[in-house]
Image 1 (cartoon, helix red, strand yellow):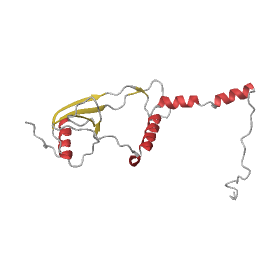
Image 2 (cartoon, helix red, strand yellow):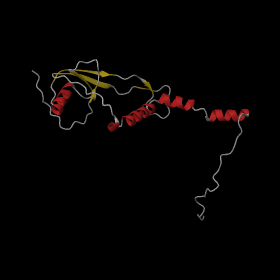
Image 3 (cartoon, one colour):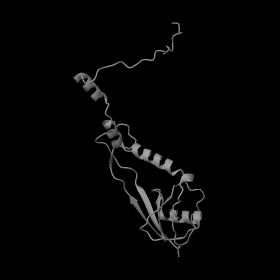
Image 4 (cartoon, helix red, strand yellow):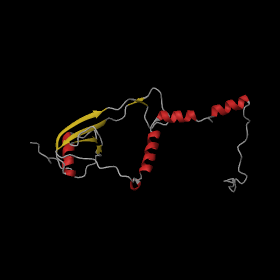
Length: 174
């Protein structure tokens, strides 16, 4: 017999996410946990936080693919490699089945559109290759402007200067 509740969990500082997976039966639940979490930690956490008894726990660490450079790099470098942090998953077998609630028809209280927009912006920002491609796709780059000026396709014109511009340090005496 497995003894539950050996390690009391008061205020955990770990983020544990329940993941929806349709291929698992109703008595199984899949969690994304920190790399430092053990099976006993998850079992005691579920017991103390939710009163949930678990029978078996399987865990595996999923290594991420090697990428060129870091996602937050401003200028991606070609021969710089980076492997993102691994992700640890745990699948627990419960004594009672768990069924996911139905998705609501109205997502307005959760601001789902704003979340999706922020998520898309974050995904675009985290991909260095996307930034490089976007910069290359802009048609009015300095090189193309210079080429068009040299070939005579476009004429150079001054940038309009604001007539009402005031000099900032006009009253300073030296």
